[in-house]
Length: 181
Image (cartoon, rainbow, N blue to C red; front, side, top):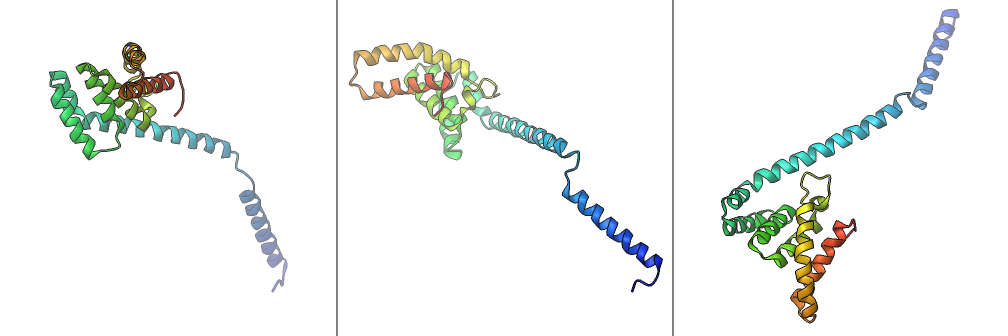
């Protein structure tokens, strides 16, 4: 099989190439750290794109509600929200919009209850850095309506609906302060 020097040279070169290949495969490439950084950048870009897509979808989906709301047809907007809530039952945005409309109508207890439901589904609405943030509006509502609900509750501590409203106000205060579920 190995008859002359040329055969021996070929076997030695083949062995050297095999060993070199194994060493290259076994060691990390110098770009391994860079590829991890690229992977995290890619993941961050994917998350940002998903957030932008979600915001665009919600704006398109709830555009008829916003149109009715700006036109002053608050009851029609609530009706349309109920229709959309049946189509997309777990969507937090419908609860948030319903809370905003109910606040405009002066039904602060119901508005707070809807904000609570929306925030329990998605904390994006109280996150300062989220494009969906309604933090300032919720904070103002909790500050103003929270005082009236608290005074009504202290006057009638046995009222179950006021106890629930007070519990909702306290939940929102906790979440606005940075608390978790």
